[in-house]
Image (cartoon, rainbow, N blue to C red):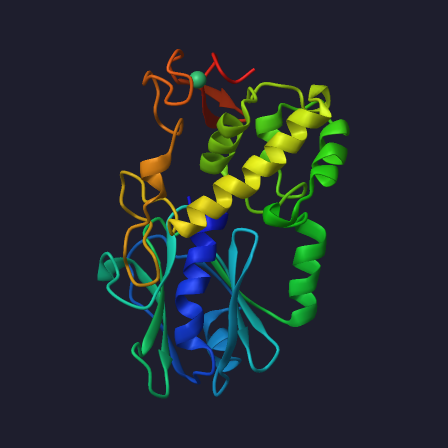
Length: 278
Ligand SMILES: [Zn+2]
């Protein structure tokens, strides 16, 4: 589930502790579960990292990017349960990769931890990373203007919830925040995108920024499975502000009249209030 706010929290958490630190060693942790996707294979992965140091940790849509002094970047897609951690992994059995850091600093190891193993870790050259951004991802959701949303909406009759999840339209929004954004906007997730008026799209664009920035300020959402944590292994708090996500049958906290319903769109759950989202 890590979406834009969670990945942003991860990279902000590790950045100050890894930048300038040389990589002493990379270790593949013993794990008996489904292996993560690692590319290239571990030997070459480790070889290209030897003697380099981290120059930045940043976010690309729902991916964490760790830049290296060689110009290569480690691109991590956490998918369902992946985490970047400096301390206290939830359990040692699902550690996948360990970077041992040289030099002084509070933390001497950086881990990639992934319970379900759906995450991917790829070492890319700068041209490969540029190609990924150019071919697979639209503008970052936080950078999308109202005009860009107008153009994207005009172009398709798809339901607005489905459009919000299309990473080629706007990168970074996932299933949880899409429901919260549409609730905040007062827009039904079933609305065909090309039927939305300009003022409603402008309101949605503002809600995208508000919801994502609030969630970043809260360091993301830690759901009932308690999997997501910050780089220092602390729970996020935005789950306490969710208005519709996984609130089926609860009274709508916004209008106080409707009950939250769950529907399925493009094989994903959507939560909304039929009374105040039209
Ligand atoms: Zn409502």
